[in-house]
Amino acid sequence: MKKLEKLTQEIISCRKCPRLVEWREEVSRLKRKAYLDHDYWGKPVPGFGDPNADVMVVGLAPGAHGSNRTGRQFTGDASGDFLFPALHRAEFASQPDSVARDDNLLLANMWITASGRCAPPQNKPKADELHTCQPFLEREIELIQPKVFVALGRIAFDRILRIYSLRKKDYKFGHGALHQLPNGKWLLSSYHPSRQNTQTGRLTVEMFDQIWQKARKLIQT
Image: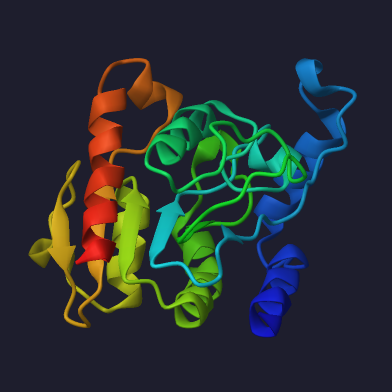
């Protein structure tokens, strides 16, 4: 736990990517009209959940007015509004919503993290920024030792492959695609629960529920 707490503090204090530092702090100053009375987090967002988790969920990066505002992964935006009800139905989350760091949400056997820790302009981190952030994810994996990765989106999927020096051509991304890695860990991929995917029907509630049912079965075998 102490090593995980140390890593969390290192993530929060990181200022290695000038473009991201400038953007996250500018968003925190200007704010969105709906959140003018909110005290924005405005720093890199660490992972959270059960430190003994078998399942590690890896997303893309914080949303400018979601995690960058609340300071917790997938908290306070449309992606989280789709994610946490599904996790609650699958009994990974103690409640179906996630609105703030102090809202009493608890995760069971799950750790939620991201490929990038700072909100990027247009929700598009650059490759070099993701590379700079990768050691944080590597250390989380080393400390948590998950049995199953759930990659939300292709970028998260590719990042896990990169960490393990695996070739993209050997591992196909697709919703519900499941791969066992050479080290025995499982990599399960899902479309990202972004508004773009959920409002267009590319990702439905039923499709998303199937992901968490698969994850549950994998850790029970």
